[in-house]
Each structure stands twice: as structure tokens, then as C-alpha cells.
Length: 147
Length: 248
Image (cartoon, rainbow over the protein chains, first blue to last red):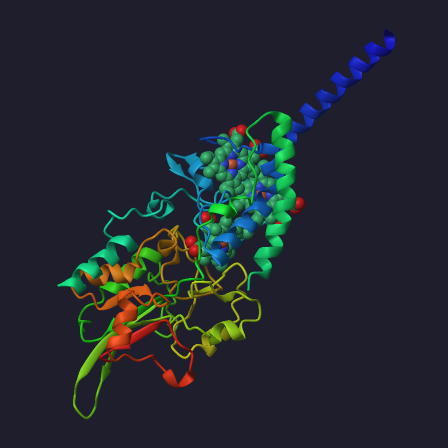
């Protein structure tokens, strides 16, 4: 009985300790939208590899329906200050919450925008009824050739 | 060409296994990475995208294609050290004058998307690359800004970004210290849209830029190339560019 009690105390003690560590850990800004199916822990650990993998898919193979699109992180991970989403310049930015703490420095935002963009036209496949779709364009050329 | 991508793909398949375990354990829907290949879209090796530019239809005083490219890809606002020699230009209007006859003719010049691109040959990091569908790109993630490709390009089609860039377009991430050029609007083509310059030229009523698949013998561009005279810029170099000109 005493042993069990000791065990219980140790377990509670340990969780208490873990909570204490969490209080020191960086405060990750809350996100909106659907959480990642693989869980936070997985993304915390692997986000860099996922993005590195998917950027090669996009750039080298033209595959754009990727799961780790840096262009889309801020759909859900935008941090606002005074009603405006903050850029990577601001230490409150989502990508800096942990990085500043862990002394990680990424150069992504030299090129990529670090705020949400309302330019989402090129996310969806064009449909033939859109005038600037390749299908509509080719149809116009064909109609011209027929005349 | 796809060595780097292959390697990382294998890495991810390994971690994909980890994904499955984790999600099964926590009872969340199973979702695997890198498994979407069966219905993958993307660069199609069965195609080669190209442009045919008719200089007769190109109005000397019109630069809508340049403006459209700037808007689409977010280049063209120059910083404090701007100068015509160093400013970024993915596409520019060039006017030629025949000294004997006085005929002037105007046309846009951009990356010619060569079949054998010298910029790819000289790149020390593999950043300069050609996609399966013939589009020549800079993978800026691997670009170290050495500018060999700029030296190698006979068309002066590439630019170096000399100054900090902010508020980029999602269409085209770009930043200081790397080389860039016309991407034929890959981000649009991959989503089934025509390049911005082609769209704007048509909207301006000129339709001087014809876009299409050079590998498809029935495409309008292939038929035009078959039936009417056209030239490749610097044809003597044998680079077989994907951009061709008429009436230049």
C-alpha cells in the first residue's frame, strides 16, 4: 500500500515537474481552422522536413496540392496586433514563438510573405468557364481558326 | 534532375510511417504523407509549353505584358539604389530598327525556355533547372546568387535581386541575393491558367503572344510554327528555345 502511495506521489510529482517546464516553454500562439491530423507534437518536430520535402515537390515537379505549403501556414497561424497580422519582423509572429526561444533562425521570409494573402486565385484548378483558363483560351483559338 | 527531390521523398516516406503510427495511437483519422502520387498533377513530360510572339501584332507603345507580369509576380518596385543596369526585369519590351529601311519593330523578350539551357549547364548548385514540361526555373532555395547563369544566358533574361523585398506576392516568393527570371507563370500553368502576359496581351486586343504545347502537333502554336516562318533568337547557338518570334 505504501509502495503504491509512493508511486502515485512520484507520478504526480513528475507531472507537476512537467507542468513547471511547460510554463517555461514558449507560448505558441493559438491557431484557427482545423488542427493537423498528425497532431501538434508531430508538427512541432517535423514541420521543417515537411516543408522542405513539399517545396521540392512544388518547384521540381510542379505538384502544388501539398500539405506543408508555406504560402498557406498563415491561413490559420496569423497573429494579429492592432487588427493587422504581424510580419516576421515582429517577435510575436507564429514562426518566431519557438524559434526565438530555441535560437533558430530561418531565412524563409526574405522571399516568402509572412502574413496571410487574399490572393488565393491560384490555389484551385481553373475551370473551363474561367476566361483565363487554358481550356477557355484554347477554345477561343480554335473558334478563331474556324472562321 | 530530381535526385534531390527523390532523396527527400524517401525521407518523408519513412516519416510517413511514423505519421500512421501516431495517428492510429491517438485515434485520429489516418493520413499519410507523400502518398498522393497516384492522382498527382504537376509538370507533364508529355508537354512542352512555349510562346510564339508576332512582332507585327505587338504595338510599340504598349507594355501591358510587362505591367501584367509585374503585378502577377510582384517585381518592379525599385529601392533606393535603383538603376536601369541592375533593376529586375523578368520581361522587357525591345524595339529594333532596321537602319537601311527605317522599319521599327517591337516585341517582348523574356526567358526563352531553351531545350538545352546554358543557365542550367553552368549552375554550380543545381538551382537553375528545367522542369519536365520544358519550363526553365531558378529553385531559389538552392540559389547562392553567384550569377553564373546570368553570364551564360545569351538573352539577358535573368536578373539578380540587389535589394530587400517586402510584401511579396504569394504567386512568386522573391528576395535579395538570388537570381530570378520569367517562370512562364508556372503557378498559373500548374493550375490550368494561361500566363499573365498572354492574358493581358489578348485583353489589350493585340493577341501578339500565342501560348501552347509545342509537343502537340494539333495545337495552334505548333500549326502556326509549321505553316508560317518564324525564328528563334540566336538560332546559331542551337538552344532550341520554347519562345519563338514572327515578323521580327
